[in-house]
Image (cartoon, rainbow, N blue to C red; front, side, top):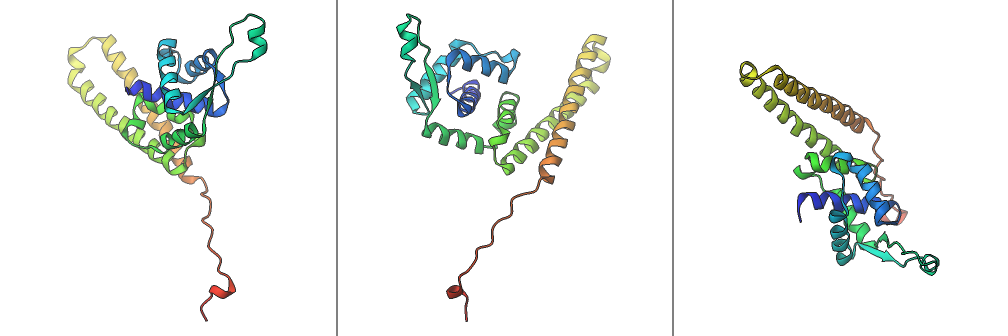
Length: 198
């Protein structure tokens, strides 16, 4: 499964976790979630849905008989199954380098409310580390090429550098907020009178 399909899978499962939807509505929500520059076509969405149906992560709900009776084409509604909820939870528990990359981070961030606090923190720190590496690369390239490129290329380099610096600052604020958030206390097991050593 390609990297883009993996991102799409997380996004579809996450949206269907909220409520069942038909393909058109799902595509519209995906395009809002993923942004206009990564618009999802039906040619990408339906093979993904077919694979998820075969895996048992989603199911097709029966079309509305009233719509069919009116001669209209009934829309297939997709709903998350119990296996799909389990698989989505497994995907949300992942916090490795793939989750830090441009293609995955935005989608993972969209479902942070359902993600464990420790996993959120690892993803945020990993993403920040990845961007700090990118900043070092930008700065080194800018220093090497400053005298050999025109003003427009320099402006483009400066714009890229400022964008990454801005995201690093934003991530640092999020990390500080995550670290400052109170963690639920771990309950201390209580012993009954018969368990207390004499």
